[in-house]
Amino acid sequence: MTHETGKSMARRSGDSRFATRWLTGSVIDVGSGDDSLANYAHMFPLITRVRPFDVGDGDAMTLDNIADNCFDTLHASHCLEHLIDPWLAFENWIRVCKPGGHLVVVVPDFALYEQGFWPSRFNHDHKWCFSISGLKLHERHVVLLDQRRLFHAAEVLKLELVERGYNHALSPHDQSLSIACEPAIEIVCRKNPA
Image (cartoon, rainbow, N blue to C red; front, side, top):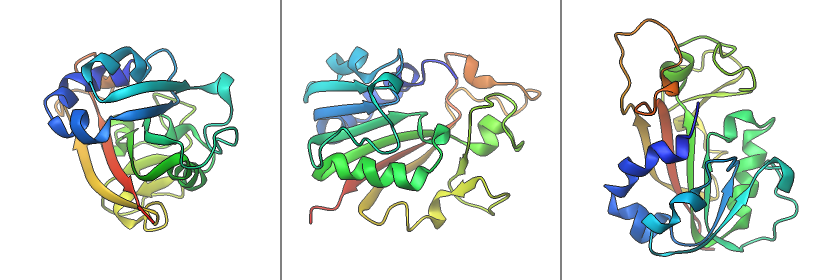
């Protein structure tokens, strides 16, 4: 998977909720790599700053060097599937958001990206795979609609299967290598205000 944040920009720019509510204020971009949301902040006029956060900045799962309630938004594109404990990560990602703040998280979709195979044939560092609904197929498969624990401190505002550019007729290969293909799930949550 390459430049997944950049791929999402055309799609997100067509949805005013990103520019007016979800990607606003002070943003931490967890797992930013060389495709940070900071590169696209000019497309979202209510972003005041983006703090990229990658391997050299600390542990993306614990964010133990980041204070509670200090960011308006947490953005993480294709990071959660690489972490040992996605539940602990999500808990800490919520922790660093201000009450009422937003989380915009993208993960690869199991059926589209892994194409039903586990472990992943296309990225050997994937520790987890994700689906919106359906049967849990193995111990490393997270079915998001079954995850009350994951979303206990946040309200899910958007849970979308993103199939932009995906060709179901092609033989199995990593379609995410194409700049036109996003085989993913996008989650937008709001941290509970209490």
